[in-house]
Image (cartoon, rainbow, N blue to C red; front, side, top):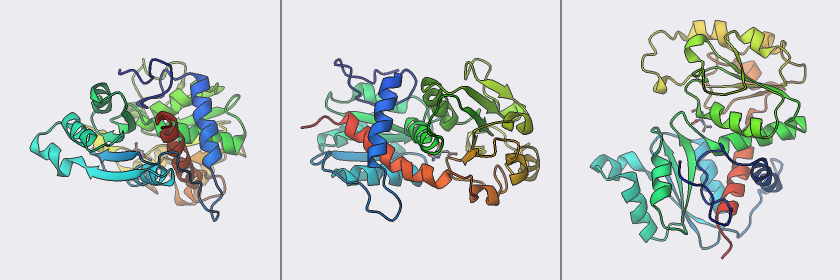
Length: 315
Ligand code: NCD
């Protein structure tokens, strides 16, 4: 893994939350919280990135994450370019790094990269000029660091703390970069108990999520939870999804209002989106009073502003 920090210890790239110290994560969350504004109020803006150009390079579809990074950069005064890489140079066999080096010559300073393969953002980070930063916007099933931060921020806002909480991550944990980054954020921030709850075929490997409690039944995994983090069924990452019947999955593993009663009465429900309503989550729960899903989306912009402002050095 490419080093994320400069020799002076400051954060240069953000590819994973694994290995970040508690102080580093706390600093990013505190900066993000400063950018949070209530809906209806004007969003926070600054000139912290004036003169900086940010390129969003996405080879996998994305709505929220791409727009969220774009708004974050614009609200800090940056210029933004968006590239759907598979439609341009990648299809012609040009590597992502070559694309990046071309853009680097055009004075792009920050690259936001989403790729279905693991390792692409790290390779790019290892190859760019010293003044350039690379941020992951989702890497295969491995990491989605800004999502992990926005999840931690959302929990902290709703619950006032991370320590002492029991968090159940429920669903397709095996294929989820969201679950892996949430795990790194929450364990570093001192979560009391982290549970991975999945049908046997969707549980991660034994060596993964060290220290987490593993459950193969949702009812047991939900008992007494403070936070229920639902995940999307990621068919695009399954070799063979013929076995997966949506109706059966909902019966066995879907979050209904009945099941939610097994968690603490004040438990919150999260989902990174896009949601498969009626597959992993019932619509009334997704839109219900315990849902923090829309907060997650709002917090995404604040977190990405904090990360951008942190990696870009003041001129
Ligand atoms: C997630 C992703 O792409 O990893 N979405 C997101 O970024 N909010 C989760 C998913 O696709 O299920």
